[in-house]
Image 1 (cartoon, protein in one colour):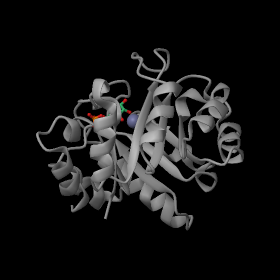
Image 2 (cartoon, helix red, strand yellow):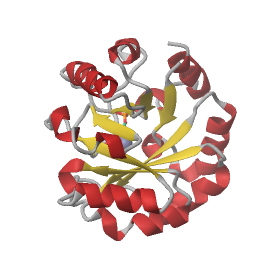
Image 3 (cartoon, rainbow, N blue to C red):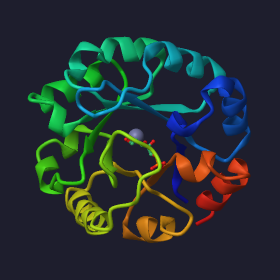
Image 4 (cartoon, protein in one colour):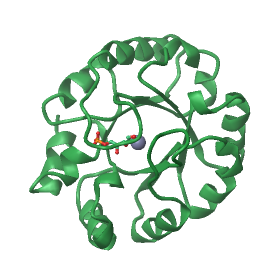
Length: 215
Ligand code: DX5
Ligand code: ZN
């Protein structure tokens, strides 16, 4: 069964407590928290204060996706918010291996995110050091975009790389996941489905989460 990670980017920020309660009662596994800096991506979302509050509102895993430049400056601060998984973008890290070491030494699980144009082969030399690959299936920055179809081939290729190395790295798919395409994504080899618009834009988010989970 896939791990379901609702993206709170699409939640109602005026009613975050209610949104957290709904997710707590649902079959969602992780809370996916998208941090944007207006530099790495053309949008600004939220940062530490919000994550700190969300952390108090759930015992589920907080999966923090940093879409920011110079993530090494903030890794400790995100650890302090209670993040369980900290994901940095390959494209934003000149010293990716060092960034991963820093996250692990702080006691968090380390994720590496790759943009749609980034080849999975570039992960070869860090795959053994990380817990998660966040494969972007849209260009990062906004919720509610269309799934980029080439992602399916990338998932298959990455799954093969992970199997060949005998690793247990999770593949997370982020962007444009819907009830219609989720099965194909899982069959290609994904472990974690991030979904924002599909969940929070539906009339019954809990039921939508249950449907994604049962695929
Ligand atoms: C996009 C974010 C995603 C986004 C997904 O930059 O990383 O997590 O919230 O939203 P949907 O599921 O609506 O495409
Ligand atoms: Zn994300």
